[in-house]
Amino acid sequence: MVRSLACFCTLTLALSAAPPVPLIFDTDMGNDIDDALALAVIHALESRGEAKLLAVTITKDNRWSGPFVDLVNHFYGRGNIPIGMVKNGKTPQDAPYTKVPSERKAADGKLLYPRRMMDGAEAPEAAALIQQILANQADRSVAVVQVGFSTNLERLLDRPGARELIRRKVKVLSIMAGEFPSGKPEYNVRIDIPAAKKLYSQWPTEFVFSGFEIGLNILYPARSIQEDYGYVTNHPIADAYRNYMKMPYDRPTWDLTSVLYAVRPERGYFSMSARGTVELDEEGRTTLIPSAVGKHRYLLTSDVQRAKVLEALIQLASQPPGGKQ
Image 1 (tube, rainbow, N blue to C red):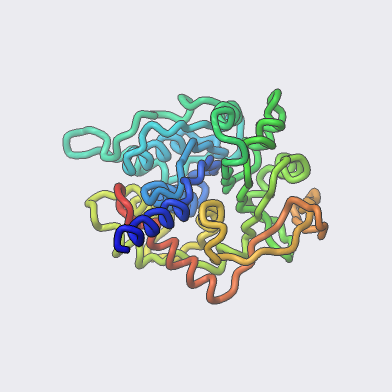
Image 2 (cartoon, rainbow, N blue to C red):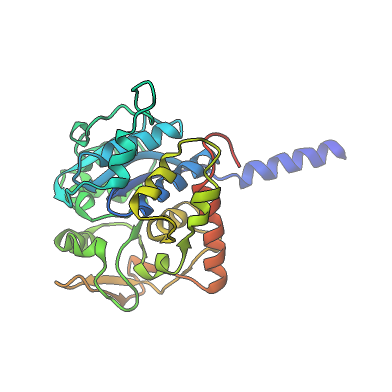
C-alpha cells in the first residue's frame, strides 16, 4: 500500500509539473526602473523552473542598456543569454540607473558587476536575433514579453519568413502598453506610434495587454529595496533602483505585471477583458473593439488580486540567485 501511494504521488507530481515557459523579453531598459525589476522577476522564475529566458532585446538605443542587461544576467548566473539591440531606435539618452552600475569599479579596479558587453553597439540587431531564436523553439511554446516600444517586433514582421515563424512558434504576446478602458495615450505607445499601429493590426498571435492602469495601482515598495536585497553587499537591481530616483520612493509595477501574466497565466492574479481588437489612433489612444474572434484582451484586477500580485512580485524580484525558493 505504501509503495502504491508513493508511486501515485510521484506520478501526480510528474503530471502537474509544467515545463518552463520559453520567454523573449523585449524591453526599453533605461527609461524606467520597472524594466530592471521585471528582469529580476524573470531570473527568479527561471531559478524556480517556471521560465527559460531565451533572449533579451532592447528598444532603447543607448550604449549602457545592453551592458546593464548583461551585468544583471551575469549576477544571476546566466551571462550567456543573447542580447539584441535596436538600431536607429528611440530614446538614446543616458540613464543613471543603467550607466552608474555599469561603470562601478571595485577596489582592485575591476568592474564591480562582471559583464562581457562593454557597449550596446556590440550587440546584434534585435529583430534578427528574435527570428533566429524563434526558429529553434517548439511550436506554440514561446511567450514574448514586450515592455517597451513596438519598434523591434514591428521590424521583425518585415523580415522574410518571420510572420509564419511567429504564427508557428509564439503562443502569446504579453505587452505592457495602452490604458484601458480610458484609451489615454500611454508612453510605450506614444514613443513609436507607427510601429505600435502596425504591430497591433498585423501580429498573428494572441495579445494580452497590461495597461497603464494595472501597474499604476500596484506599487513596488522602497522598503523592499531597503530590506530584501541585503543578502549581498552590492546588488545591481537595488543599485539601479537607488539611481533612478531619490530614495525612498514606491514605483508602479507596469512591466512586472506583463512578465507575471506570461509565465503564470492561470494563477488567478488577473482577470481578463472580453475579446476584441485594439485599435490605435494617430494620438496614441487605444480602444478595444469587441469581437468574439478578436485576438486582443487586456488585464483586469480586483483589490484582492492586486494584493496577491504585489506579494508575488516582491518575493520574486528580491529572490537571491540560484535555487528554488
